[in-house]
Amino acid sequence: MIELLAWIDQIETSVVSACIGKVALLRHYAHPFDPYDLSIRFSLARTRQFLALNHQAHRCTQLIFESRGERHDRAAQIEFPQILTRASPLGHHQRDFSRFPIEPVFISKQSNLAGHQLCGLPARPLAKWSFDSNSIQRPVQMIEPT
Image 1 (tube, one colour):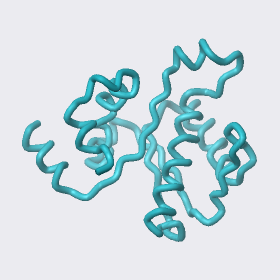
Image 2 (cartoon, helix red, strand yellow):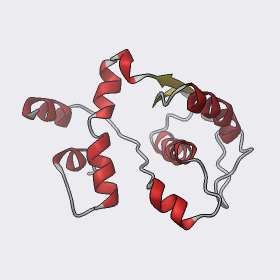
Image 3 (spheres, one colour):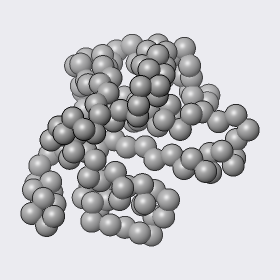
C-alpha cells in the first residue's frame, strides 16, 4: 500500500467525487432525489467546472460510473441526457452542458479495469472524510487541492 500511495502521489491526476448521506437525505427532505441520481448531478457540475477551468470544454470526456445494477443503470442512462440538456435542473441552477461533449460509461466492478480500480481506492476514505472531516486520512490528503 505504501508503494501504491507513493506512485499515486507522483502522477498527475484529478479526482471529482460526490458523497451523499442517504440517511440524512431522507431525514431532511420529504421527496428527495435518488441518491445515485444526485451524485451524478453533483459530479457533473464539478466536472463541468473542472473542464472549463482547464480549457477542456471542447474535448469529449468519458465519465466512468460504477454499475449499480440493471435498473439503476437504465434509470441513470435515461436521466443523464436530460441533465445535460438542462431539462432537469438541480435547485435554482440550470447548468449548461451544451459545450461539453460528455459520454457516460457504466462499468461493473467485476470488469477489473485498472483505472476503475484506482478510482475506487479513495472512495471509502472520501466517504468517511465527507461525514467526519476530522478523520483526515492519507488518501484524502493526497487528492486535496494544493
